[in-house]
Amino acid sequence: MTARAADRARYDRATAHLDAPVAIVDLEAFDANADDLLRRAGGKPIRVASKSVRCRALLERALARDGFAGVMSFTLAESLWLARSGFEDVLLAYPSADRAGYAELTADPKLASSVTVMVDDVAQLDLVDAAREGDGGSEVVRVCLELDTSLRLFGGRVRVGARRSPLHSPAEVAELARAVTRRPGFEVVGIMAYEGHVAGVGDAVAGRPVRSRAVRLMQAAARRELAERRAAVVRAVRAVVPGLEFVNGGGTGSVQHTAAEDAVTEIAAGSGLYVPRLFDNYTSFSGRPAALFAQPVVRRPGVGVVTVLGGGYPASGAPGADRLPVPYLPEGLRYDPQEGPGEVQTPLLGSPADDLLIGDKVWFRHAKAGELCERFDALHLVEGDAVTATVPTYRGEGHTFL
Image (cartoon, rainbow, N blue to C red; front, side, top):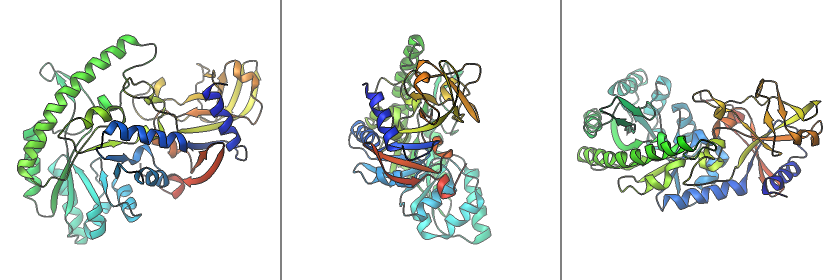
């Protein structure tokens, strides 16, 4: 029996009492992935990216391990909810236009001390101050400045990387730091620089050796350029804000590279805990799939075909086959190219289909980590061949923040 077949047998036994659709997290794999992230971080603390987990119980499980510290959130409403729930160090990774949320933040000392907001434009400070005027909030807002990490080539005519912050040079970031420090009610405490073109792009795509080689060359150049520029940015900002608390960088795919930079004080990672399918294609690390979902077989249309209920759970990003869930267990199933994964039903092709009966489970892996939790109210936590706990996702607690 292969390792994957053994996992399938365990998951089927563990969830025999549960009807599909159902989502699980294999805690042994989750913990092993956490250990691997810590190893790669080389002693620098890891801030857990909540959008890749979207389950308070599993955020708490990761943060209970030495080496994990703080949460990187994705909306202001989520940040405030986490802070009220006892998370004391929440870094909002994206600018917000949530005026009601800012009014709450600036009026509550506990929230203001626990949440740090992201800024890359003085207009974002205006939104905060407008919210203060309505409710009279006087608390000092902790601010993190975001650096654009994109690699610019040929005089800027070619750009590689996500379109995030407009702040690219040390001078631009330092100027915003000065603008914040001149403004009452704000305090610069950190810098963030997320190199998504390194951390979130696989460099060993099966069947595409030329593309993989090109990605590795691009990433090597990007790491060198960013390490030098990030260090210069930190020096420039520290000249304005000597008491800077943290410099955040990285992501699951670049943990060890980013941790090697002296200028970086902490690493962000989250997807590496669940290891969705998009993180299979890396030369620098390999993890264990920890989060899976199962759909039930509801039809047997013919030889070599079964149909499962639902399953059309595409991930965000540029549309493409890599954004689709992948049939994982039993091994050897594939989508019908004329239908793909459907909203209500999904036909699956392959010889393993002939061994599946009505009611059997087919296990899938989602393309991106936390987005799976937008489809399920609960995650069943598996240890060995038993479900030992069932915990709510954000959705199960009544929250869909985006």
